Image 1 (cartoon, rainbow, N blue to C red):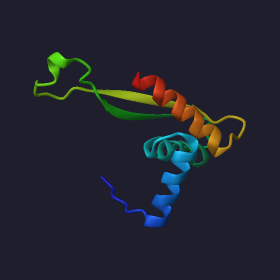
Image 2: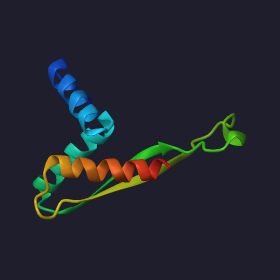
Image 3: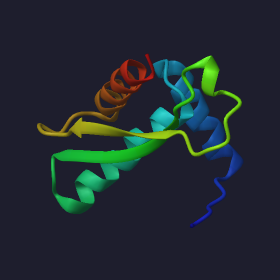
Amino acid sequence: TYTMVLPSTLHDKLNELSRKEGATLFMTLLAAYQSFLSRYTGQEDILVGSPIANRNYREIEGLIGFFVNTLVYRANLSGRPTFQDVLYQVRQKALKAYE
């Protein structure tokens, strides 16, 4: 595990961008990470996995156990999209996955 503390000014600007684009901070950081991976690897099809809680039913809320699903976020970065385009892709896919 690697921990990094962002300067408060950067954190504030990321939150502001997220609000402006109607996204969460997670979505904004995921879009940035996928953009970084695309540039670093030279690949246009980027997949990133992220765990999500899987306690969708009242009957299992009290159970002890590891109820987690992994969501795979796929971004197509062909054609050199803008960051806002990548963030829009991430936002749409995340919202659909959370339904």
